[in-house]
Image (cartoon, rainbow, N blue to C red; front, side):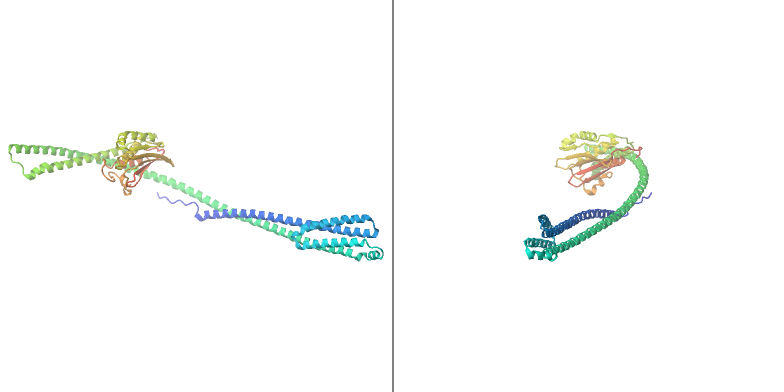
Length: 500
């Protein structure tokens, strides 16, 4: 079965960048709209204040014009009738006019032209009052002449000029009012256009973002479906490969069993003949001794050398070789038996297992002055015998390969990650050359100085067991810096048949 490569999330990173950019644009548009609302509100408040100011000036101008007209009317009545009531009216009108002028002087501080006109109105009012006080004192022919030409006298001229100034000021305020109203309309138009443009931009951004998100979601859905299909295919492939490995493992185990038994038979013969050679050597040696004692003719020098040196040396080599072969065959048989043993998963207390191993090594730990620390380890569901064999091998190796002259420090720690239990056995011993990290797991292969007993089987056996338990063993080490062996097992291994 050939597995395809799952499609990545999204066609490429540009879609994700586009979404981020669009969201940024939308956020910026919202900020711009908020700033526009704030600016328009402030501008409208300023415009409203200016309009209110203009209206206030107009009200004051109207009040002054009304007081000015009343003042002239009361003056005429007073001159024509002499009724003192008109003098009272004039006084009230003048007070009102001056009050309005004072208010206008304050309101027109921001408009020098209007303030100059207001000052002119005040000057006209002062001149009008001065002229009125002189005219009321006229008598005789001068009074008659003033009354005859009343409509064209100086006082009427002051009133008419004041009227013209008021009209000019009203025209100016009306112009300002229209200008400010036009500005308000323009601001409102710009605000409306800005909101409309911003709203349209936000709609476009939202639509584009929604489109990209929907497309990415669709691609994600397709990728998940494809991944599920790949996972299903991968599970089938793993099952097939596992079955093949199981069959291959069974064949290897049977082969090891046959080879070990086939080797044992000639080995027994070799060992038997070695014993006979030894007996023959002793007989020959006795013969030579009797020959020396009784004066027999002794063998020549070469024969004696072969009997006394070559024959014992050869027999010694044969014996040591056969003994080593016997140990190797026993190791192969042990591996074969372990490989054929049915594994039985159960709940294991790894802390208790490691502590039991530590207790069994107590004498060796005390003898070497080593500190062996076991931290609380996570529980696991697996085969007890296999797990004990693996941990025992790792801890014994750490204790076996200490650095000479350095007090040993061995630590056993554990944790759980992503459904797997990780147990680490660390030491400050000799360390292992990185080039030998995989070599030490080969059968009958060892690393470093060969000053410790062993056949190079333990780590190979431990890794093989770890594979059968659904895990593996890895090492991190450097020469002279100690080693850390890491056993990784599933938290809950369900096991299989006897050949798994």
